Image (cartoon, rainbow, N blue to C red; front, side, top):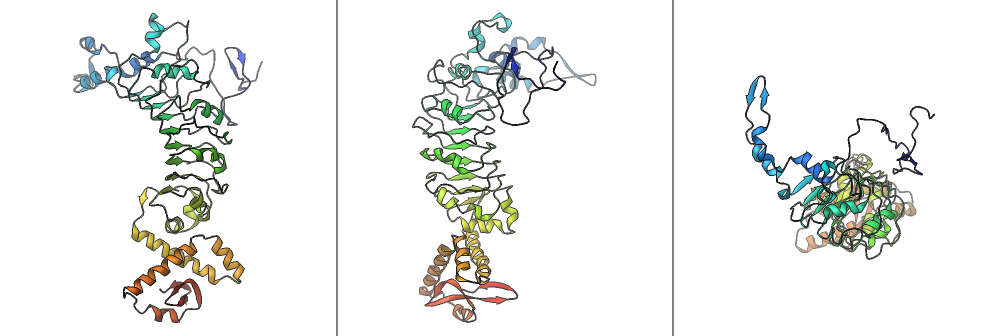
Length: 438
């Protein structure tokens, strides 16, 4: 007899060779002989449980009286809400999360002795636009396809937390997901091979948003074919155990990818293959990653050349420098939004000047030309910003805006890196602080 607490993987008396989760602490504590286990049900029974019976108003007269502190209470407004919910075909957002819905099985006994088709298939003409089937008892993707085949207005589908046996499209209704634009497959214990098998252009021809959060996707996928969602714009890879961007190399072939969410992944660097670029990506979410310093953001310029929005909250970047926001703005000239806050023109100008002033003491402290070169190489925006400021001063001079700035430069001691009216701009030390006079 096994010791108390020992976990044995089995299903219907058959031993299983492996578990669904890759986590070392994953286990099930369900007692198979427990009599209190709630039984599975079909989808229409789950709708009835959640939203009430369609013949609600035939039973209104027989409903129980609500009594509070010995006084009868009139339910004002509840009839209207219940009427709207009980009209199942008119619902637009339907949440059947955690209602023990099982798939369609031929030959199985259905509840209330109704036909399997009545219990398992949604009638035509229903107006559901968002459907949440998360944390149910589905085992085959065809069961989900059967449910969605008659929902011609469905736009968003969530099947998070289910455990599917994923196969090709053989056997599922054709064009069951033709109208779908959003799909959430979070925490389905899938790997890249499963995702590539499931998410094909033929199955989801118009899909724009895909959530793959909480799956084990740390192994690089094989090269993507043209059948993998060419219409995809938003991809969520939250908590997928990604430690490097090299894992995402095949995703660079997605032609119009716009938003990539990498939050809560153990990323410590953004360095990648020099040929790895996301040419169309504009929004990147790095929230709760492990990026150690501001220099970790430098590869963004090459990897995400069209990036306009960045999120870095709850990372070591903020604690690495008291003015991390200003330095981040200066390092990334293309972004217009940082941590959901727009970057105004005067804020960018201040950030760039602060960045130049911050690098000046490092250059002054350099003991050799080689050390200065190393400092400049670790700050790729130094030369572009210095050249930009030089051109701005030349324009100000042409417009007659040059006021006594040459006198301030006479007391300089070390070069800054740009020229003003034929002279190289220099810096002066005051109270142990270095300021650029331009």
